Length: 172
Image (cartoon, rainbow, N blue to C red; front, side):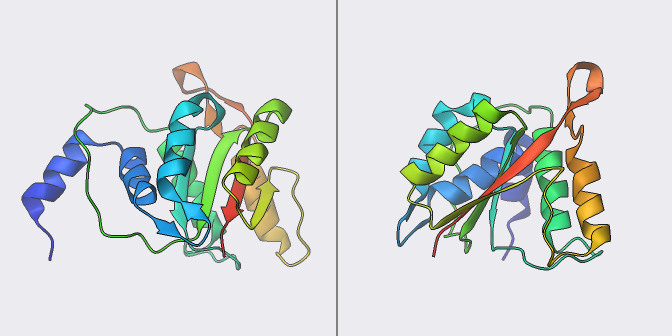
């Protein structure tokens, strides 16, 4: 059941990223330790712009339920403007096993984020940027992702001037 008063409080007091971070923080399974991941992300906030935790996304579709939807979610969270801070939210475990991090496409940033994947004992770490090509994906999907990541991060005065990269971490 949804408690509208509680939802209104959460919506007013927390950013979308804080809500997702709370979901990740409480998740523990196999080698995945949500508290460790969120602690590291908080300590290295200069490396990333946004992140989501979900199930792996394999097939593109135009309805937004695929990786295209993840790209849009990551960009929306990254470009969100801050709201007032609040207290900690408590959630039931979030059923996900893949962390997608949106970051600026710079070699030093990508390298450090890849190193975090090793520290977190992720079973698989992969990179998707504006030049990523996968023969399993159709041309329209690759073009969409390429266009969205190229200049996808807003600079000052909402000028889109920085390329983005998505790093995914999967735990079995």
